[in-house]
Amino acid sequence: MDYKIDLPSDEVAKNWYNINADLPVELPAPKNSEGKDQIGTLPDIFVGECLNQEFSNERYIKIPKEVRELYQRLGRPTPLTRAVGLERKLNTPAKIYYKREDTSPTGSHKLNSAIAQAYFAKKEGIEKLTTETGAGQWGTALSLAASLMGLKANVYMVRVSYDQKPFRKTIMRMYDGNVFASPSSRTEVGRKILDEMPDTPGSLGIAISEAVEEALADDKTKYTLGSVLNHVVLHQTVIGQEIEKQLEIAEEEPDVMIGCVGGGSNFGGAMFPFLREKIKGNTDCEFLAVEPSACPTLTEGRYDYDFGDNVGFTPLLKMYTLGHDFIAPAVHAGGLRYHGMNSQVSLLTHEGYITPVTAHQTDVFAAGKLFAKCEGVIPAPETDHAVKVAIDEAKKCKETGEEKTIVVNFSGHGLMDFKGYESYLDGTMKNS
Image (cartoon, rainbow, N blue to C red):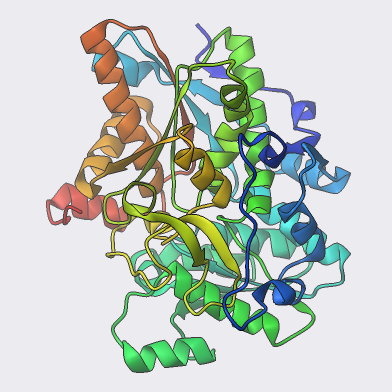
C-alpha cells in the first residue's frame, strides 16, 4: 500500500487550467452598478496581468518559469496521503486520500496565488500590495510572497480573527507584512463603520473595501485578493493537476471529492480539473462543497449580482451571496466567513455539478480532533469542514459496503488555531 504519493519536483504544473473554456454555459460577465463605472476602475485596483487572466477564456495559461521555480522551492508538488488510520478507526471499506496543502511554509494552499500575484506586480513596477485576510492564511502567504519579490504588504485582518489568532499576525510581521485590525481608523471606510458599529467583529467585505481604498490612493500600490475571483482560483489549479497524476499512480478513480468553501479558491483549485470531466460526462464523481452553517452562502444565499466588498468599490458579480453587508457570527473558521462565492463555483453549483453542504462548528472541531488522533495532523478549522463530511461519507460506505474512493483537499493546518481547539476541548465552544 502506498501511504504517501509524492511527485518529483519537476512535475510541478507548467500551465494553470482555466475552466472558463469548458463551462457548460457562458459565465455571466461582471457589470457596473447604476450610475457608476466600477469596471473602469479595475486597472487602478488590480495588477494588469491578473485582470487579463480574470477575463481569459484560454484553456491553459502558462506559468512563468520564475513562479514555477518558487513553487518548487516552497514545497510543490505536495503529497497525496492515504488516511489509513482514519479508515481503520471508522472501520470503513472506503479509501480516504487527503491532498496536503498544509505542508507549505505558511501552512495552507494560499501561496499558490500569492506568489503569482506578487510576481506579476513586481514585473509591472508595483511597489506595495494591499489585501484583506480572515483567519490569516492569505495574509501570511501574501506577506511572504511580497517579501520574496521585494515588495511591501499591508494586510487588513478581520477584527475577530485579529483577536482570535494573534500568532498569525506574528508570522506576517516576520515576513515584514504590516497588519491592521479591520475595520481600522486608517481608511475612510473603516472610520465610518467604527463610528456606526464600534463593537463590530468586522467582515471580509469590510476588509476588502479598506484594502481597495488604500490601493486606489496610490498608483504604485495594487490590491490583491486571496479567493473569490477567477484568476485566484486559476492559480490554485496546480493542486488538482497534481491530484490527477497522483491518483493515476495509485490506480484510483475518485468517487467523491470534498473541499471546504469560503470564497472558493482551494475548492475550485482542487476540483476544476476533475469537474472538466464531469461536464464532459466522463465521470460520476460527486463534488461536495462544505461551508459553515453560520455562513451558508451556497446553501441559503441567492444566485444574483452583488458586490464583492462592503461598500461597492468592486463591480457586481453573478454569484451566490448572502448580501455584501452580511457580517457572519464569530466562528473560528475565519477563512470561510465571506458573504459571496466565486462566480465559476457558483455557476457550477447552480447547474448541479457541485453539491453544497453545511456543517456546525462543534461538529467540525470534533472531526478535526478525530482526524488528528488518527493521522497526527491537526487541520485548520476551515479544513475541518471538509474532514467532517469525508468522515460522514466514509460512515455511509460502512453502512452500504461500498468501496468508494474519497479525496479531500486538506487546505491547511491548525497550528495557529489553538484558541478554537481549546474552546472545543474545554466545552465552552458555541455551536453554529
